[in-house]
Amino acid sequence: MAAEREEERERFPALGPAPCSRPGAAVGERDAAGGSRCSALPAPRQRLMEHARRRLREFDVGDKFSRLPLPRAAVLLPLMVRGGRLHLLFTVRSMQLRRSPGEVCFPGGKSEATDKDDIDTALREAKEEVGLQPENVEVICRLMPGIDKMNNLVTPVVGFIEDTFQAAPNPDEVSEVFVVPLEYFVKPLNYKTFSYKTSSGYLTRIHCFTYDDQEQKKSFKIWGLTAHFAVFLALVIFGERPTFEVDYDLDNLISSSENNFINLYASIYERQKSNL
Image 1 (tube, rainbow, N blue to C red):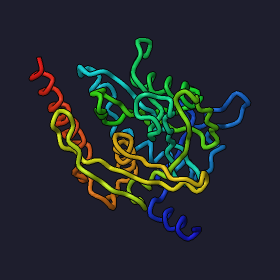
Image 2 (spheres, rainbow, N blue to C red):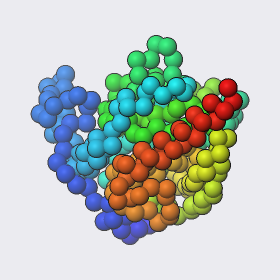
Image 3 (cartoon, one colour):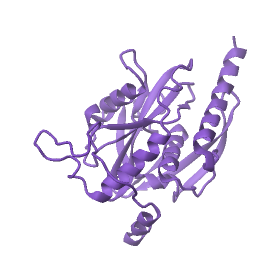
């Protein structure tokens, strides 16, 4: 097991310089106690986080798609550094929920009138679902949105959280919380895929991962839009070809991901027009 972990670290090296982890903090800025937040981080962790920041900011879509006439939702993709590797936090939906009970997802939900933007939505939902305080999230970017089976426009918001975060799941919404190494979504041990035709007739690829959590001694199935966002996040940060097929031109990831989304949206828009 130790040899496997060392091999994985070699495949995904930490690169780049490193600033602070706190949102909006400048290099060298001190916390309330007078200590430097930047210098408190080990150098390899800083380099890993800064490499991820640089890559993610290249793919930040901001408000580009915010005016599309679809119901809005947002999810938080919480990244953390644990054991020298990037990890991604997931939740399992409560069995009490009417829609998709027991399925793996990211913290998130529909936009509310009091939300200023997608970031507000994602942070509010993360606080409600797992007790993650907004001030403890370093928001990095918004990635290319997706459209769920209810035709909600879902925007993934990526942010760093501390690896010491202790989730406090709201039992009405969340039954479990777990983390997965991000590289699992480019080099998985248990993966399958299948084609799926949306209600608008658009044919897309569905990724399905099974992750064996050694700490919790159980397996989790990660698929659908949640897996789609996790795969895209891993492709962006690592810049490596996965061991499975994806619907993108990996040499032109920004333009091809945008084209895929536009084609999906166009298929839904045309269907809506035909039903008028």
